[in-house]
Length: 294
Image (cartoon, rainbow, N blue to C red; front, side):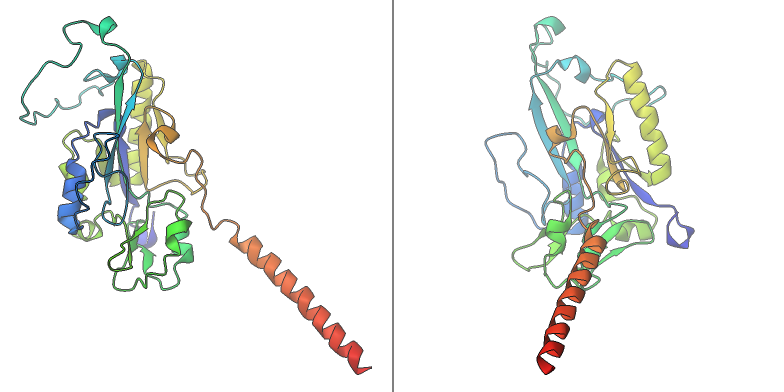
């Protein structure tokens, strides 16, 4: 529970059902009035936004792999009783290799994942902010107050995930707020509302963790042993994330650090060592001064 006995709220992103539609990116931009960041085709991927930044608070990664497509067949591991797939009204077509059969499709698959600020339990960005522009909300999330941020940028290297970013044209830092204004009105964040497959789920963090555990168990029973949770463990280096993920491969494949730690964890011992060094220096100066007077 957070301050005021409100439950902590968060995101559970199940990448195994992400279709890469980028509806979450668009909804985030529209609701939060995030500036457009151009059509920067990388020529390396179908991903045109590249990664999280000051003008991209949600980012859908497209990862191409040489791996069996068998684990990517529609409906694999779908929970019992789950609603039917959503018809997006897209034109139907035969997927490559459908007529050839599974054995002749070759080795290729897509991994797609909608990334976002993790809203860490131990948030280093909060520790280093000198103005109080970053604060933890009554929902347990971490938000930047743009009217207080002075653009010092200390929070940028402090983030273990490289999420928070400075907008060059105004000098302030920006990131996902988990739609703090919508939460205050009892609404779910825009990205979760727009997701057509429930890949992005919003709710009380304890409930989401239990739901994620069940989902991983179900996928393992379906033979998808690569399914794993990332950021779910409250005992990890950041105390667990308020936004955590179900992945189908190692975190590094998705551009996530395998073992993130709060970057300010050593500050107390650093200050103790600095204090001890200052005391020794002061004692030396005092002894020298007294010695000259004799």
